[in-house]
Amino acid sequence: MMAPCYACGEPIRLGDIVGVGYSMFGKIVYLIGRGERCEDIPVDDWRHLDGGYVIQTPEGALFHCAHEAEMALLDRAD
Image (cartoon, rainbow, N blue to C red):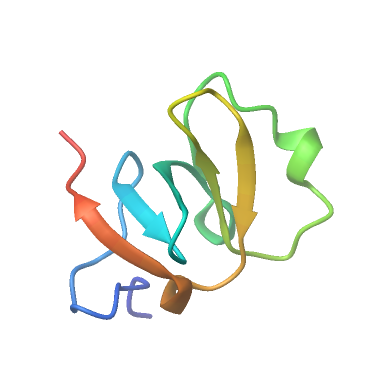
C-alpha cells in the first residue's frame, strides 16, 4: 500500500507544515489512518473519525482535514 501523498507527489509526514484552502495552515500532528501522532495529541478526541489528518495552527488550535487533496505542502518536517 502506498503512503498518502500531496498533489506534488511528496509523501505526507508527521510534522509537515501544510496549507489547507486559502486561509488555514499549520503542522500535521496526527495521521489518523496510520495511527502516527505527536505525543501530546489525545487519541480519544479524534477516535470518531475514520481517517484524515489533524493539523495544529500556530496559535495551538486543532482542526481536522479529511483529504490529502485539500492540503498543500509548505515546509517539510525536520
